[in-house]
Image 1 (cartoon, helix red, strand yellow):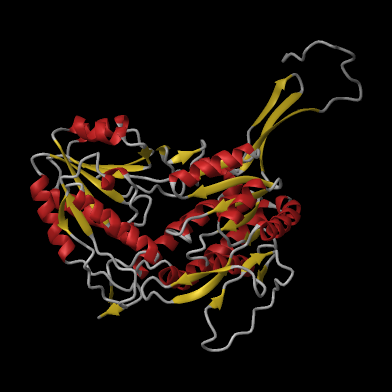
Image 2 (image 1 turned 45 degrees about the horizontal axis):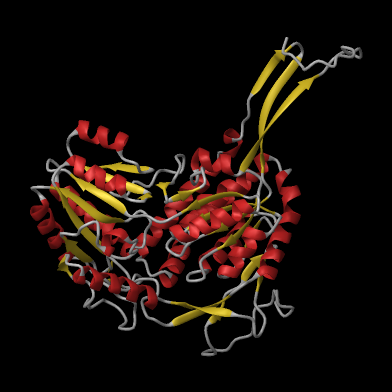
Length: 519
């Protein structure tokens, strides 16, 4: 950390440049000093730089970890009833002011306001789940397991836990982890994406307002150097990560090599299987919603539409008609009280990358039914725009099928049977989410049993579980054995301990060197 870092906000004047974004360490905003490295934060709908985020490295991480470690003993020993009071206060503040957080998400990520509000609400569900921590942490007790010997189990917090979150859900993904971690008695260091970091700082300030002690929740910004510092720091007990598969594998390998508990959620290539008996209007709505929501920048987005013939032509016609009515534009801009359906992509570089995938699909022989590249968006001309795009007759050898595009590109793959579709899905190296659309209960039950994917929707295109279930995929969509939130999340952020207890009269049993027996 630079010796020039200060908790005092730098003096700025109108037009002097982008607003500085602070770290949050030990309950205070911490600003980078002059000359320290920063990165621009851009409004994707305008292309204009709105903020400057500090790129913290090992020293900044060390300061945050030190604050978290110092806060841990007192927070661990805080009564569950008091912890829950703080959780409830945070929940009420979040619920009352979630419009503020949604506006931050729209300004830095680009997703439309309605989508941003949905993100905050889904994260809030995990906060509400964590409010039940007294019940969730109950252990077991066996009286007289042996003569006058009682045995009981308890679960205790790990200590300092690290969270590394992606750009696509700056609020919801961190909330998959930190409410449960904090409720269970841990302290947190969050490293958000440097592309849209302000939500994390807003959340940190809200925690302070809710009464969370200083140091329990910390935010350090940065890129790879900050990630590596978290992975290497000996006082960080666990890492929770969400991002691309190559980075998830790196985080898992480096974190476990350093002796940490790691849950690393990776990439996805989610398929939606449509059988001939499906309600095609429902399937068309679902394909458009799941394929183009949040500009396709969701790990649960449908990107491969697997259609069992002979209904592909009819389904594509329905999808195309619905795409024609979509409005792509500035997520904060309302027209007659109505917002756009889809916003821009996160950065110019990512927009160009998605456009390159569209060009590759054309070159590889797929039928480009709707081309989103020449979109005229309802917004600033310098925004990072790419409209909804639809390909037909895509094959598994094409890059638009094999790669995680992470943009508004939907590919139709035609197959001859349910078995062909299932085989295609199970052959994918990813196993995050999938869906089947059918009116055949037997086919649906067979699919949920046979498909090798962690989250399955039946006539539900984006099967994101409720907070009291766990979120996570299979295969290269998850490294580690713990999914996010739900019972698995609670298990991840606690360690089991079993106590064997005997309270006797002043006399004792005497000397016996034999192995203890239960009798």
